[in-house]
Length: 92
Image 1 (spheres, rainbow, N blue to C red):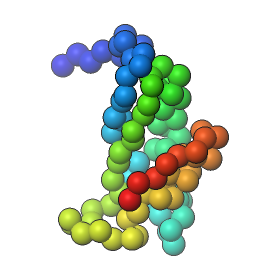
Image 2 (image 1 turned 45 degrees about the horizontal axis):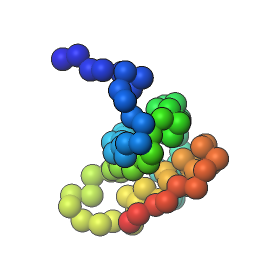
Image 3 (image 1 turned 60 degrees about the vertical axis):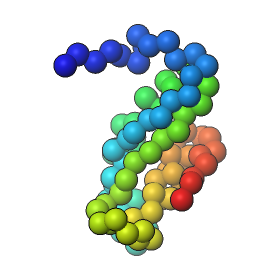
């Protein structure tokens, strides 16, 4: 299957839902390896420059349908904010 590149799409004034694999390792609520977050930064920056709004979604761990605080993406949102130098609104 062929996929078009982001640069080939007309994204002006569009709202984009970006599904990311941000399943990063945590220890005591702290990220121990942010490689996956770092890898997403160029795509996020591109979309910030070329779209109206971005909503990002991901998952962490395998909570088996239950809400479990240890699988919160809040530390990921905080790290994204640090790397982007922007406010990231986190929705539970």
